[in-house]
Every structure is written in structure tokens, then in C-alpha cells.
Length: 295
Length: 295
Image 1 (spheres, rainbow over the protein chains, first blue to last red):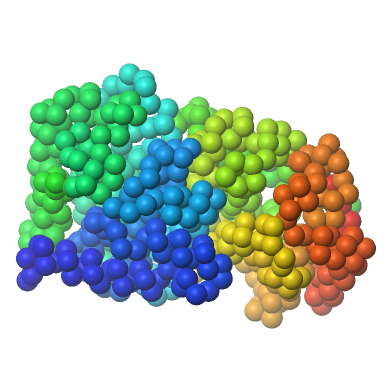
Image 2: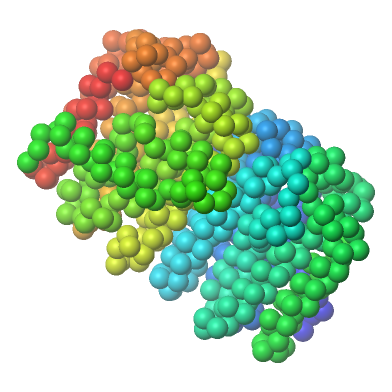
């Protein structure tokens, strides 16, 4: 069995090709929009959400050809949210994954449409007949992703984030925001990967507990990295939360307590998977990776 | 059987209540986003796409409780596209359905998220278990709406529209743009309504032919109205296509030829339905309504 780094690299490489195939070619009309969609999705990012889907799929004994669609769907939703979040009316950021953001490389109107079209494409991927044979489960997956992306999930978390700028908010309020903004899609990634295989509800609940912990840990670590790293290492603008007067786990708790919180969530995530034994190896490793990453 | 105006009014009234129930309450978090979503969808519009879905559903013998979800899905997609199209980086419009556009009433970041969340909600509605018993067909409906909304459908048409500003384009190119920009969602409305009932493929193809004609006619009439009507009658800014130097059927063909084209498409739409006899009454009436409307 390959070590974790080899596993990650192999999946990242393979999945890049999957995305290349799934995204519409820049040769077909509307060419500029398709080129901008490809620019925004390809050649970038750690693919954390797809990796979580693949790891959960492995645990659930899923066919990887099916998990490809689930992983693409969550990554397309994630990519659309980055394109929209970077726009001038939102975070107004010029750098993402080490390159110019979509509205800088193209223009704002195109960035708006890129995000819109990527969201549609995500749902198209989940409705693909090649995803599997259980159409009832597939329809559940559509609902799961729609709820995780919408006003009670990711988009809602972003709205709470916008409203919180310059305000005093409590740690539970911050947690509520992140459970939606980042956590909802991370949980969905794991569940969608798992749905491609076969687990019972109790097992799915354990995976969901893992996802909830790891989603929150991901954000806490993000805040710590934003406060400590420099822009070159991060591949996106560092220190922007403080500059934007945004409440973060670091501004609310301090760096030390934020790191302690991440460590606690890390432990809880690992405990949630204890019954799965060696089957949860990749999810355990991903939990380590998410908490200990330096970028 | 009620006359056409009574049929329209009854469905509009009833469907308004359906949308009120389906949209998240402005009392639940994130309140401002939910209020802005409701502002953008409720109390406005002729609901042409839902009416087409209901008429196609009637023809196909569908349960109206199912068609409600299909009609809501297309209307939510339509509403999201209006919110995004009105934004400053796109058409920069301040008036829509007789009231301030979403980014004017709220702010640009909220308008961006409103559109994003409405799109997710549309797919959530199609994945509702209450839509029906045939999950395979429901999954097909998800795919149909995703393709109609995405880069090969509505969003792609909008991208071509943006690229065409200030350019000389031909009538076939203009048609290609509108087949995507407006036509794709109108066709989807009819097919989604029909999928809630039971029709064979040949019948669905005839309905799709009707949808293609009526979708294009809708746009031709829009162009004529934009060139002739005033802002108060239209409920949105009139004459803006000319001001924006956008190619339209009127600028390319002149008003008289554009009206002739609409009349031809109207006839072709009615012919496509001839085999259905009195069952297609509402779709026939809607074709008349779309072509002869004054606003």
C-alpha cells in the first residue's frame, strides 16, 4: 500500500485529468467562458475535498469511477465559491492558488458567469448516469450537495461572514459561521464519497462526525496560517483577515488556544473513525494532513 | 374550464404561495440573505416559465403537487439569473419587476450570494422526495436543468451576449445566443413540467419543438417591446439594449421583420402541438400570450 504522500500525489494527478475531461473544452462555444472555467478549476489547489471523497469512498468500498463524479461535484462547487468570493464586491482578492484571480485574469462579468456555470456543472456531474446504478441514492446525493451549498450551508456561511466584518462576535457564533462556510462542503465531500459505496446509517453518522470535526479544524488551521504565514508560502494573500477586520479563531482566542482547539478537534475526528480500523487509514492521514499542514 | 386569464391568475396566485413556502423564512439565519432571496423571487414577474411548466404538466396528466417543484426550480434559476444579470459588472440595472434590483436594495455581495443560493435551492427542489415516485426520471430532470442552466445553456448565452456588445453579429449568431440565453430555460420549463406526467419520447420531442419556437419568439418580442415600450409599462428600464449598443432582432432586422419572425415562430409552435388537440389548450394560449403581450 503506497504511503500517504504517494497516495495523495497519485490521486491529485489522476483527478486533474478527470477534471480536464469533465470541464467543457475551450474549443467549443462560448470559448472564453469555457477557457475561464478551466483556468479557475485546473492546475491548482490541494484538492482537499476530492481527497476526502476518495478516502471515504475507499473506506466504503466504492468504485473509484463513481467517486470521480462525486469528487468533481464538490470541487466544482468549491472552485465556484472561490471565484465569487474573490470578486471586488466580496473579498476583492487578486491572488489565488498562486495565480491571478479569475476576475483579474478575465473580467468581473466573466467571473460571475464562471461561478454560476461551475455550480450548474457540479449538479450535472451528480446526475450523470455513469455515477452508479442506485438512482435513489444518487438523488439523495443531489439533495445533500444542494443543501450543503445553499443558504443554510456554504453560501449562508459566507453571508454571515460578510455581516461579521468589524463586529464583535462570540466563539459559538464564529463556529456557527464556519460550520456553514467551510464545514458544510467538507462534510458533504466525505458523505458523497461514502454514498458511492455501501455503509449503514450508523457508519455514515460516524463519518459525518469526523467530517464535522475536520471541517472546523480546517478553518481554525486556516486562521492560524493566515496570521503566521507569508503570501508566497500560502499562494494567496496572507494576513488579509486582520487587514479586513474579520473575526477569526486567532483574533478571538489567540494563536496558542486556536492551535489547542485544532488539536482537540483532530483527536475527536480520529476517535470517530476508531471502529473502522485500517479501512480508515487515509481519512486518519488526511486528518493529520489538514491539521499539520503549513500552507 | 376557466378562461385563460382566470387560469393564469389562479396559477400565479397559488404559485406565489408555493414559492413563499419553499423559500427559507427571513426569520431563520442568515436572516438578511433569506430576506434578500425572498425579495428577489416573491411579488414579481409574470411567472411565464412556471406557467409553461403547469400547462405542459396538464397536457401530460401530471399531479400538480409534483409540477410545483419543477416550476419552482425553473423560476428560482430564472430569478437567480436576473439578480446576477442586473449587477453592476453585468447589465448594471437598477429597476426590475417595478422595484429596485437586489444589489440596489441590499448590496452587491448579498446579490451575488442570493443568486448563488437560489441556484442551489433550485436543484434542492428537484431532488425533493415529494416530487414523485420515479427517481430515475427525477434524476433526468436534475440533469436537464443543470445543462439548461450551465455554460452550454443560459449562463453560456449570457456570456455570448456580453461578448457581442458593440460587435457586428449575424442573425444566425444572434439566434444561437438567444437559444441558449432565454430559450434553454424556457424549453426546460416545458420539459420538466411534462416529465412530471407521462408522455412518450415522440410526444416530448413535439413539446420540445414548441418550446424552442416559443423561447425564440419570447426573445424577439422582448426586443420589439424594449424598442417600443416605455419604462413604466415594462417595469424595467426600456431602450437599454440600444443604449448598451447590443445587437437585437430589431437592430438587425428592423421592427417590421422582427414582428414577422415572431408571428412565424408562433405558428410553428402551434403546429407542433396539433396532435394533442384540446389537451394543449393552455400551451396554445400561452404561445398567443407570449407573442401578443404588451409588457
